[in-house]
Image (tube, rainbow, N blue to C red; front, side):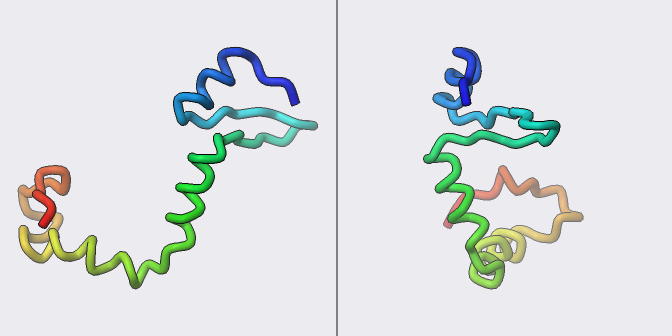
Length: 74
């Protein structure tokens, strides 16, 4: 597979590149991006639940005015 200079530059900046092969669409990722995404997809949601719920429980529900990005990490 040959990639254009623009596609290579996008990959170097951590972006995914869309390619079409025989009418099917695929995404090309750098190895680093792929490895990071794979680690996240392999997480058990039960293991991540406490990390997500701690700020929620400390600062209120999503119906409150607190935005997640405004929550300081503990």
